[in-house]
Length: 309
Image (tube, rainbow, N blue to C red):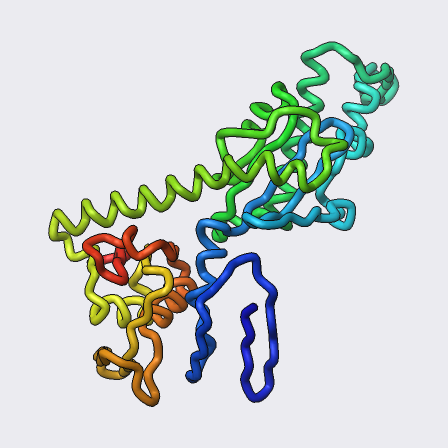
């Protein structure tokens, strides 16, 4: 359980993780123990694709919840809905013009025919459907600045078609195959989770490789010094932070002088500087990986990649 208390706030959360017992009194809430939920068990979306019914789930490593897409006016949830206002797809109108001899004007003569069922026309209709769907989802749910993974679920021939219509860059190449219409949310979640876990692990490895390369090249764009990292986090300089789970570094940070004081034991007025660095990295749009202490390079409690040297 995590409990946050201030003069005007009392919030508590039952969480799917176990924590070491910890009480922190400070000018702000202590959040670092919770951040492991945001990276290796962070948020992701599952998009179930079929011509008859589109489903969208928002998920974490532990649970999922289906989103009511019918409440979004510009998100079509079926092929029929996407095309019902499209006169071209409904009747395939053909217009022939004939000259009016008296006024030399043109009038339109329309001949309608039913929607064809050949493969080429069906694929064209599905692509129109998917383009409208992708546009609606990216307007209402899939925001590019949040970098939330998207897993597609559907029969084999629909997956590449949606990828072609899609412009959201954080979709996973691997997908859940099969008709998702009647699968429970829990089953969709269990099938999609391994795909996202692989993405999370690769993200950490890429961050670690980038850190080691930058540190080895002496570019000034990487550091494991807490005295450098804390002010860099506060002033929006950190792109990626690796921080050791379960460790604390107590001290003070003077925002005016940008000086950091580290104390071997917690003293009155201290705060956990690892928590401060992690919180401000997230606030300022950076990525935070809370990992086992042995996964932070050089046996340090923290390592950072800077946006600039």
